[in-house]
Image (cartoon, rainbow, N blue to C red; front, side, top):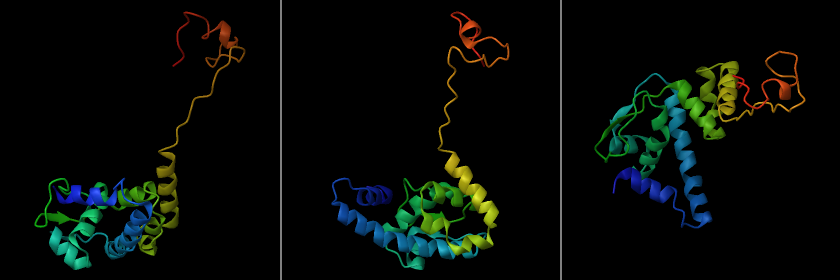
Length: 173
């Protein structure tokens, strides 16, 4: 079994007691936050090494490092081979700043996207705009329903039922 499979089996164990999973994540999130605080202090510096070396560097066990790599992978400039990695796989933590911020918003990880280190990377206005863009990306906007007696949207001045709503009439684009 790969490191990633082992991590995911433990982190997302549907058969585990809810209290045990909560305790697991309560222990993981502060560790994750501590790494992001380090990475965001010098966001253009590439941190690279084997999974084992990075785990030692950040004071993690291999499984916690695997979880961190799983979480950050979609935000990296060049994704790591997390599906097949082992302790000796060389990985990079070089991330796309905007993508990372937006992925943190998407994950609703307010303890991460509200880190003060972001202030030196993006202005408050930029962060606000990225936040709104990410939140709106999941909003489904249904088109306004057209009722038979409404004016036809084509601008003909006719009721919809007598224009584009008529059986066999061309569809509105």
